[in-house]
Image (cartoon, rainbow, N blue to C red; front, side, top):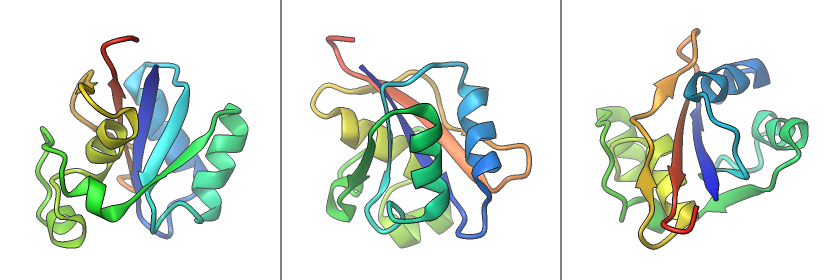
Length: 120
């Protein structure tokens, strides 16, 4: 199972999230983001467009994930280096691994990273 972690600015349009995800080059089985962003209309719309579940990752689980990318702004807010990478890893669960470091949308408003587990 491949899960996309998505990070985004509050003012990001759905198109920014789609752009970041498309740059990963992967089809996904679900998308995940921080629990405090999961009610945002653009992430809900992305899940609906893709026809996949949206996983709201509890903030304390994000802090447990070690990420490739390190953003001081994200570290201050979420306690991890990359929201997209941490959300993907946490949503996949035990023995998850990133397929690559996170990518950023063309407009810089959203990020996406893909993680999968050993059974994928």
